[in-house]
Image (cartoon, rainbow, N blue to C red; front, side, top):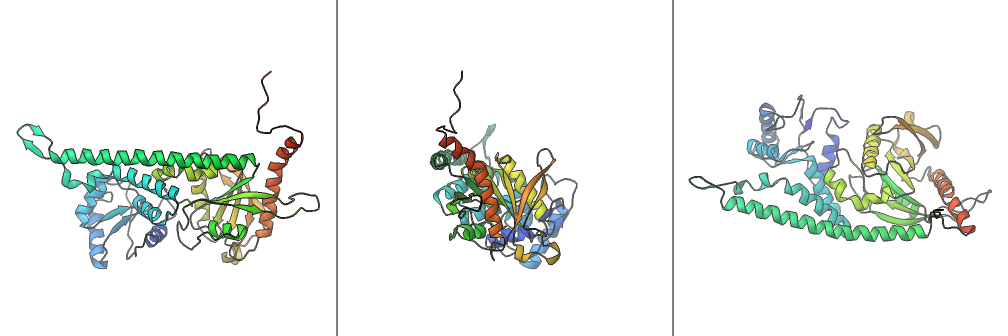
Length: 390
């Protein structure tokens, strides 16, 4: 169910892919245009009746909305449609719950799920609504049960946050160790299903899970990337960098997930270089780039040096093939709106086309960043130690 067409998923293609990724089978799609969402039913009573008739006709067992619903709207729609109703946020949470593999990933998903559930007690626990206990008395066992459930959820949220703090400390320790080794760190970021994991496997010969589906990878994986021998100028002499594959972004990523995945997304914020992977064969890649830039700004990674990597060169239409393997382009800043010029490289992670040019580009960035540190070390200085005050 789509509300309006202000974004690039007017055909509900992405919502359909999300549903399939979660194990559902979409049977029909319907859109709605309104000046403002209906307070009670989000879509209005007439459109709700239309949805109900379509569900009966197609045999649908669940209705999905492409926007976030309030707890009251979700409850009213379920009563009106007589079917389970879920929104985009819950669908993404369900996918994350299915895909998380590491201890950290499971904790992050659990925290986001609990935070979402804490706002849905009004819908999930309608049988515990307030009861009249007598003349002039409000309350009763139902109200006490709701308070008990809220307390249990809040305690679970607190415990999960404490466990995530420990995981975050461990990651900080690992990052400090890499800093002491003067390791140049690169993080792969990008819209989901842009091919980050396939590229990661091609570069470091890893076996990270990669598939043509949304959110195939949720857990951050870090490997050492060897960039090759020295060239005629003596640059890139056996340079090894640290490469991390991170979770993909998506339009309207729930803020609860951004907060919950802070430890994982911190890899991007602390990187020396961001390799922003773009699905070059997707006609909506411009909107996807804007969404990724927005999330990078939210997590404080917008100031990290960035290279655009247009992937899936083998799937691009002939008329859209690049003239050069490496060039530059302008990307609007999500805050100021001003254009920002970024380097751009075209590759195919599946066939390997363009990977040598990518390695040369990464070597150049690593040399430019690491060479001043090496010079300081040779001079007997600690590049990370501030000069003492005079």
